[in-house]
Amino acid sequence: LIKNYWIDKFNAGISDFNSGTKALGKKETETANSYFKKALVSFTAATGIIPDSISAFQLMADSYNYLGETDKALNIYQSILDKSKSKDDAVQIGKLMYQAGLKSRQAEEYDKALTIFQRVLTIPYLPKDNIYYESSLFNCGFSNYQMAVKKATDGKSKAEYEPLLNECVKYIEQVTVGSKNK
Image (cartoon, rainbow, N blue to C red; front, side, top):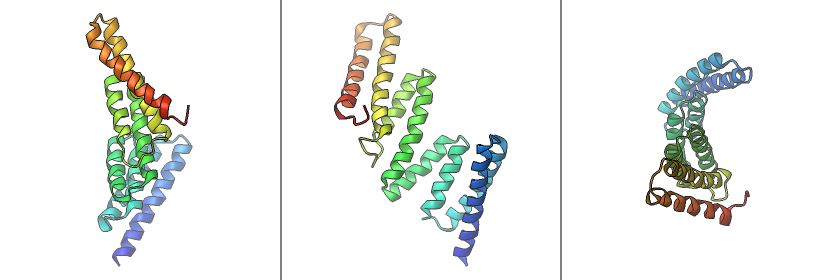
């Protein structure tokens, strides 16, 4: 009986999730968001019924991601990774974090971007030859470089910006030595 209730909630969530992705494909953002919110209600119920349901948690995280609630999605993906110890789950987390880092970098928030890219480098089970890992190494170097340039152009002393340049070189050397995706 409990399993049947879980199946009902899970299938309702999948139906709403799929409707949401179709609405996104048609550029109907409000409609899509409405479906993703309904899907979250169903997936939350499903995970309450069977707390070990990785597939329900995965779709819940995906729904949060589509709604732009990246932090909630990342927390769920991290809990999934803790259970699954899966390379694929690590790559998904790496992708989300990398995208968040790029947004910070594009906004010229280099210290925030650096923190995010450094987190990508510490994701368990993320292969070192993965594009998100390698690109995060590069972006750690780039962020350090940009922070050094800002300090130098603001008239700060060499002692204040030189350590950032040294960090930049450290990251870029790792990219040039280990990268398979030149």
